[in-house]
Image (cartoon, rainbow, N blue to C red; front, side, top):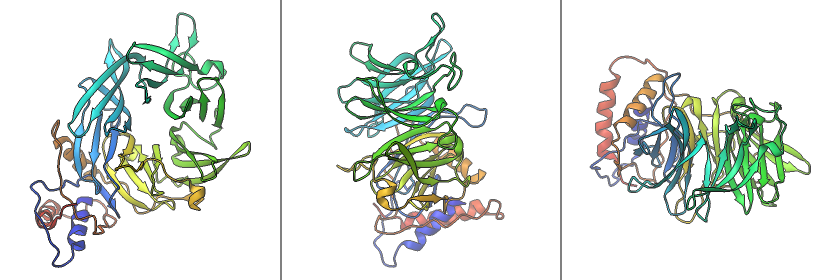
Length: 432
C-alpha cells in the first residue's frame, strides 16, 4: 500500500499551475516507505542475502533522495555474501564480501564505480569470511580478520591486520590473543571474537567491534594498547553482539560511540565521562527495531539506521521520528549516505551536543507488509545489470509526506487503482 500512498502524496503536493515535465523514465518508488523529506544524496544499501533459511542474492542497491531505485549491483559473479560498503573520496565504493573457493568462504574486496557500474579492481584474499575492511590512503587495506584458528598449533589469530596489495603480503597485525582470555567470547576453535567491523579513526588508531566479546575497542596498532573499551563479555546491559560502531567526538573533544546494539534490538550512544561511559541515547528499546546492524550519524544530526530483520533503512531524527525510509530485501547489512560535494554527510554531531539525550521509540514507520516486501523485491529484480536509471522525482522544493499505510488486505481492485494513480502521477512528476 505504500506505493499508492506515495503516489497520492505526490499528486497532493504539486501546486496548482506549477511547471511539470514528463520523464522518459519515471521513478520506481516501489521500495519507498515513509518519506517526510528527501535524503541529502544517494543512499547505498548492502544486502547480505538471506531470507529465512533460503539463500538470496548479495547485492548493492542505490536509491535516490526519495527512495527511487537508481541501480542494483550484484558484484563479481562469485559473491555469495555481501557485507560492508564504504564511499571513497573519488566517488567510488569500496566493497567487502565473501566468495566460495574449495568449499570455503574467502574474502573478496573490490573498488566499484557506481557511475559506470564498472569494477575498478578486485582482491581475493585467503582469509575466512571477512565482514569489514578499510581502504587506507596509501592503498593498503586494514582487515578485521575473524575465524582464524590454526589447528596445527592450537592458537587463534583473530586480529587487525594490514594487507599490502602491491606485495600481496600482511605487514602489521594486532592480535586479540595478546589481550583476551581464550575462555571469553565464542568458541576459541571456531568463531572466537567474530570481529565484524574496523574503522581507522586517525594515525595508528583503529576502532574494532569484536561481536562475541560484547564490546567496542579503540586500539593503537603501533603500541599494541587498547586505549578505549566499551562493554565487556556477557555484560548485556551495555552491549550484546553489536555491529558497526561509529566513533564521534563532541565539540569539546569528548570520545563518543554510536553503536548498533544488535541483539538488544536498539541503537545506543555512549559518551566517555572520566573512567566511565554514560549512555546518552537509546533508540528502539521498545522492540520497534529488529536486529539493527548499522547506525551512522549524519551531518544534519539525524541517524541512518539499518533495521536488518525488517529489511529496511531508516533516517531518524534525534527524537525518533522517521523522516526517510526504504525497504531492501533480503537482510540488509550496511547502508551509507554518499558524500555530496565537499560535505561529509557520514559523520555528524553527538547527541549530547544536540541536547537530545534520552530514550526514544521509532515513530511514523510501520513495518512493511508482506505484499509491499514482494513488490519491492520484484522491482529490484527488474533492474538490469549495469543499468543506471536517470529517474525523475517530485521537485526538491516540494514536501512529499507519505501517510501511514493502511493495514494489508483493504479490499479488491488495488492493482487497478495503483495503475490509474501511477498514470496520473507520471504526468505530474517534475525534475529534481
